[in-house]
Image (cartoon, rainbow, N blue to C red; front, side):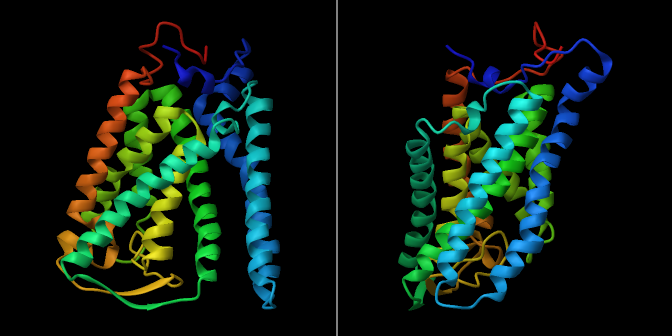
Amino acid sequence: MVNLYSQLFTQSHPKSIPGRIIQFPITRMIIAVLFVLPYLLFHNNVIAGSLAAYSGPLRSLFLNTDIVLSLAILLLVYSLYVKWIEKRKAFEISPKGSLMEFGIGFLISFALVGFMVLLMALLGYYRISQLGPAKIIVDVFFSFGMGAFIQVLFFRLILFRLSEELLGSWLAFLVTALIFALFHLGNENVTLWTTISMIITDILFFAAFMYTRRLWLVWGLHMSHNFFQDGIFGMPNSGIASLNSWIQPEIAGPRWVTGGSFGIEASLIFVFLSFVVGLILLKMVTAKNQIVLPVWKRVKSPIN
């Protein structure tokens, strides 16, 4: 069985002390962020401001085109980091099979979110108040796609991937899940339970990335989750109330079902379902031999 994770380890093995420092995973996290961050800062402070000031008939077209171009630029910048610093091809973002992997992830999250909406509707906890214009669907598809991509880029391709190379899969998951949950502490309606629930449901995203060792499946999962939860069905997304969704619903029911003001991510039912799907994926990950041992337990360290 091919260890896909080995294709994501650095292929640069310098003997000099400065070279070893550069190749240390934590150092490479910083370098990777420094590759990506300049464009994000330029975009958010220059391009986004110009687009925000435009309110003409082509606003949606310009915004969505900007998202597509930004995605392409960020993928290019990340691939340059991998090529120049890690001296390898960026297997994790290679396009072969990307549409199928993204589509599978998209359908999994659609099934999870759709099941919750159907259940709440049958119980009388979810009612459609009104529908917005169809163009909203296109706009939120692009915007949530970009938002999910940024999070996958930082939390999966950089933080988890590089910490896993050092700490192994399980410790890297704990570090990434905890930081991911802490990252959302500034959101509205956060409680101790919502933080715990995010760590539990992160098992699904963690397993999805480990299964393919690529961007596309976990991106499809993350994007679809946010897109359907907030952009389509109008529910709070990680505590943030929906501002622009196709469906404007009325939601009233017990928190353990609906998740209350935090959204279904705090629903006991949704957390359980995500946990189960995550465990199934983890079993597939184990069968595929994709668990990485900590560097101190590997026979030959790929960073030495």
